[in-house]
Image (tube, rainbow, N blue to C red; front, side, top):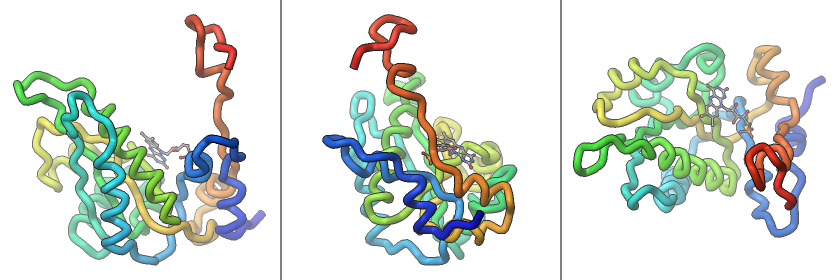
Length: 205
Ligand SMILES: Cc1cc2nc3c(=O)[nH]c(=O)nc-3n(C[C@H](O)[C@H](O)[C@H](O)COP(=O)(O)O)c2cc1C
């Protein structure tokens, strides 16, 4: 079965719920990107959203390395991608590597650095969706190679590579498995599986 990009977008969106910000249900992670560039203005907006995430002690440990298609940084990040990610993600117009300073001002380990980076990354993905773009976070990349080619210091932990751009046609992925994933509806655990009133007992919500 072949679907258009807009049919896929409809299928991926979760049902709305009154009082919940629509963007939470509308964001999803595409793998097919068009060649449309992301403007500097749009890029500033997604990082502006990330910047306002909460962080432990307001440490703001996140640092993002951003590569636009055609740049050396984009090529370097793309070169570290692993497995299937190598097939689809290099076509994204923007590749971002999220990192977080994992030591505090006193040199002690900050175990919440990646937590904070995750929050900032979530804001980034939601803001991108609000601007009509799509994002796809990936843990599947060679962390050592990324650290080396991008010169990331040892005290920064690596989060994900985030592909950013505009959603493309599923057929453009050119691979049956990837197309199948692209056109499959998203699923989530129900609330009673994830919210407890006591350990392992569903909270009544
Ligand atoms: C930490 C993290 C790592 C991920 N790694 C990959 C990856 O390496 N490759 C990939 O195709 N998707 C990856 N994903 C995307 C998830 O599979 C996707 O977010 C999940 O299936 C939920 O789909 P949705 O984002 O469309 O709601 C990753 C997502 C996160 C948050």
